[in-house]
Image (tube, rainbow, N blue to C red; front, side, top):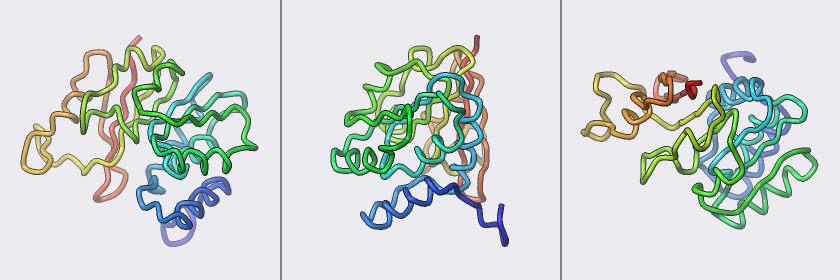
Length: 192
């Protein structure tokens, strides 16, 4: 961390943030989440996956944190954003960006780390099957949650079924991490 609590970012992350600013994309990965992804990426030994490339801010954190030779696959449903991200990461080895729906991510796995940012998290629709998407011991990350303040967790006045799905999933050991006063993330590890 830099002065006054500002999180320092790798150059690749700064380039992705600049692209997001130029294109008016406002749903990029927050720095607190990025640092977590950066850290988790260092533990992957073979493959990292992401749904929802956007302008590549989260992807840049993942790439910057991975070990050499670890493949990174990201899916973006918007063709223009996918093309922009491909251009941004063209010189990065072992990075594959596809245009498509999140449901296609399992074709490229299984993964040691999977960041569900653009679908598959179960907030809207069916959640991904972690036994198909993750290697045993692999890690699943779901962001953009408000911190849990009660049990069972609530969202918009109702029980948060998506969060409960992951916290109680029989194939995962999952916990919630509070990254900022108004920001939480689920991190789950696939049981062996």
